Length: 170
Image 1 (tube, rainbow, N blue to C red):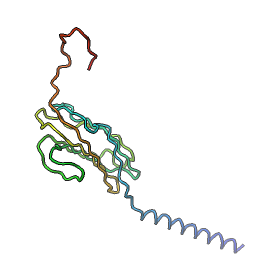
Image 2: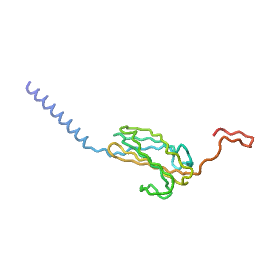
Image 3: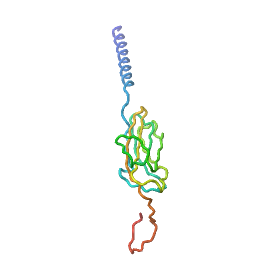
Image 4: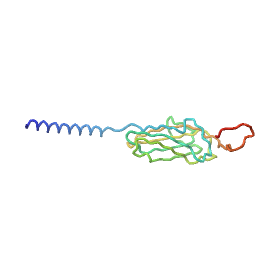
């Protein structure tokens, strides 16, 4: 009987020790996985009109198994640099920067935002949208899209045509 108690006691100690060892090893492992960013809009190469009162439409998904922390949106004139190695330079043109904390602690987040209105006199040409996301462990990922800012769309879609054919609503 004493041998069975000793065996049970030893087995319990061994199990507790293994559990502590496995837990301690997992706590020492550092998460180095970056968040995943999937941009839906704007698509690469999209055209956007200056003077857009609703601003730039941005829609994207963020994912991270350990939990997201925050994400930043950076829109700036891109005619004077690229993002193969990102170094922010000053350029002429419209810009928009904002940091969002609405995904903190979430593993998945769908973001739908609009920038401030785009001035009608903003410099036309190539612009970059950068989305930077960090997780709760400080890992950072970034994705960039290029779009072209073109002249304001001053076309009146509610006018009458002199043609004698019909158009679908635009």
